[in-house]
Length: 271
Image (cartoon, rainbow, N blue to C red; front, side):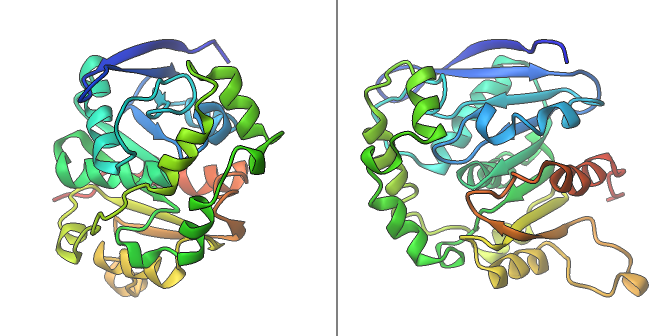
């Protein structure tokens, strides 16, 4: 596979500018924007998936604030801010519209884009992310809130952070910010989710940090959970990945591609 185009988009933040690292793979079709989860980066979250995703389309991937090759700035981690950063990236790249595939905190940022900037999102994939705090298992937030550098020492996440980060000594700062991710944010209403204009694919592991009943509620709000033999197959869909936890939500590459590619390749529904 050819080497990707890489670069930095300078995004205005409250204090310091954010130098947002991005990669562009493949070409053709509607661009696909990849948004990784917390403590991951482009390579760790999507590295195995990008070759299959980029065979027939342009893929744009980015490292979020404080992750991978993107610097941190003096603000907490909020999905609304991450989404605003992505808007700046798309403007930098002169991309008027994209399909968006977000995992975990990237899924929350993708939801922000679809609700706040519907003109930018053609199709939406939300993986292992809840649209309301009640959709997350409470023990997950508690565990993330207790993370320390010592607890993840020697892991691929720790090694990748220190190898790539512009400030490799600030890993505990990132862990603390992840522990407070979207603290106090009320989430989205049912009306917000119903009003999303983009066809939506929801993916969740069957033993995920996101509750299965919440994923089903998400699907119903997007027009799913119908008898497709009589009503037709809805534009929005749900995939429950078997034997899959939150941490390994996209690790089964062949299965994820079998779910994601048909959704992306399907014709847009007539409005």
